[in-house]
Length: 388
Ligand code: FNR
Image (cartoon, rainbow, N blue to C red; front, side, top):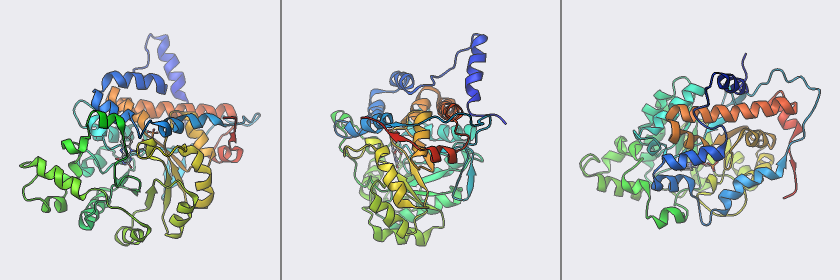
């Protein structure tokens, strides 16, 4: 059986025939390429974050103060990166985090479909955002056999929330990811300075515009009065959730429920007490609050508090080594965010797939060199906090 790291051999072999990789394998070059591919408004929206973007930078930098000790004389000729999640065996420990402007990241404005295709190409699950240029049913189909998750921005209108959940169930999504930190948008200077908020320009709202409950709330359909439809979206977006709402979600769906945005151990404990199926430790990539603590530094306490409940993680993951460090700190699965979005911008489905394959290749080779044949071995060896 092949290994993710085989990508490296393939790249060098292709080089012997004068063929260079179509897309870069490192984040810095990837971001530079995306900067040239995207319009200023969408680039600002994707690249930017909250406040002076301190948290966003810390998310990335903090990975550097966690280090791994290599083990020698371990047979690592075969590596197993598979994980069990929600009763499924996933071939790798990564997934694509929900990104609500994927649809705008490709020239044809069907970036959500391209991401789902990248999922089908790689076997890496995609978490589809509520914000999408293509209805969630179409997105699910494009992912083929690869399981996907649906991320919900809970609307204030309970019937609309239920409708979106029912559609996600019917479309075959395997988990419901409820984002907790975004009932209101954080203060994002780059977008504010250019007065640009894509949703208010009628973008990425197809899941609403195609929803029977949403449509029933409108005097005229979106095709006839887009401005009124956008206004209705703004009115209904962003229910302020509290712990008392969890019972409602559990009462209406049998999908595993994942809470995205949990960073405090007490919240992790509460989530477990409420019978949540998984906790998703994330600070939204520093896009929502400029709180100052890197997400990866909050992960260990969340994992400890979560006990046997699986913990998903994202925010600041830029490479395969970051993935392995997050696994070592106890994450069950690791979400890739901006890197795959930049791959999408420069190469559509193939570009995003290349980014995922590169991250997995680096993770696999790190495990090979460091003497960790399995994720269990990664966890057992752990990571050490190094100097700041
Ligand atoms: C996001 N994120 C996000 N999260 C979510 O739950 N629903 C969404 O629609 C979006 N949309 C979105 C748009 C853009 C442009 C970005 C960059 C991010 C947050 C995302 O799921 C993830 O938490 C972050 O991307 C992780 O940070 P990094 O690793 O990308 O820096």
